[in-house]
Length: 129
Picture 1: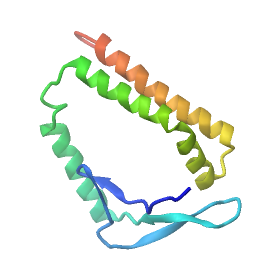
Picture 2: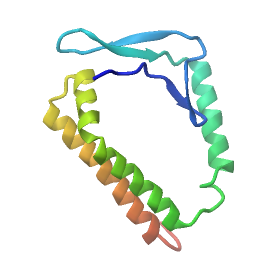
Picture 3: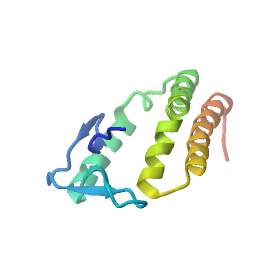
């Protein structure tokens, strides 16, 4: 499997770190490089936090989209995790040395979490305590 260099995802796009520096991530089983990863420094974190705050305050979710629309998006994320679960598990195993069976279980659980919150988005109404 060819693994692309990992960039930051900030303000809706993949970007290099502001320093331009990267580091290698290696397979713990054989110490071979998997890919390079953009180094994140304080300036990158500040940029990401500003973008997240702006999206939270001004983005489509802040404008009160319908719960059904939000649920549909959350289910879509769960579907994509399930669709690519084997690939995600493989990459996690290469990166951390986690047994593949356990990594597959974690991918499935991640999808289940998105399905759960999609359901909750349509069920929670009124006051919450």
